Amino acid sequence: MKLTFTCPEKYRSFETEDFSLCDNHGVTTDNRGKKVLDATVQLNAPCPYCQKIHRYKVDELACPFESSPNCFNL
Image (cartoon, helix red, strand yellow):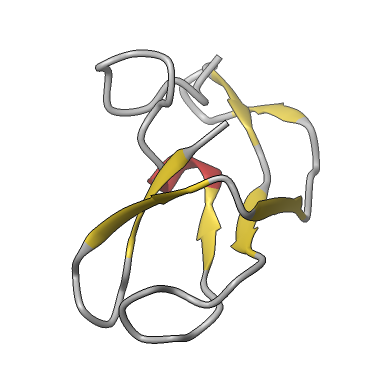
């Protein structure tokens, strides 16, 4: 599955399937009672724009299934 990422150095978006789920603490409940996935995603290959390996909090990523801004909120 491809996810869309934004390079924090160049502010350009790109899609890739080459990432890993890290620091997966499972589903947690935020202070508003909403369930969210508490994890980070790390690129396995360097960013195509700055050649660095980036890590992103899951809630910073766009939902790959919907046009909603974030579907990792459960």
